[in-house]
Image (cartoon, rainbow, N blue to C red; front, side):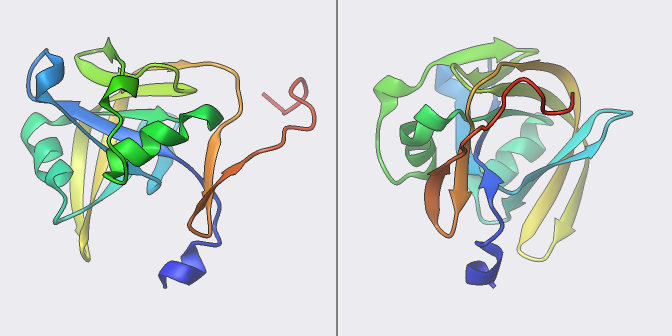
Length: 159
């Protein structure tokens, strides 16, 4: 299953939450199980393993942030996945009481509206309370490796 679904290219996000207003209370993890659910109201979903500490943290705080990473942020992805320790690279921007990663292409500040058990994961639906975005190349994940997206024409992509 993992090998088959690894052939679905996805963006890379860092999901964050905090139990307080300081950086010592921040908890984050790398995730690519993220999707948009609805435009009206603005809803997104993150799928978190039940055994992950982040699952309990989101349940406790009722809030989470999603930072969609830019192509140059692979080291941050590895840091929050526990594959490398790069604390000097981590810089947060706070929006609506949620920590988000500096330099990310997108910041979403969300409040949990529903959580649904789904096998060995929990699906946390969040209403987007604030969003911010910038232009740039995203970090992608495909077949177990980070990839780059080659943009052919940045000007005419339909929005």
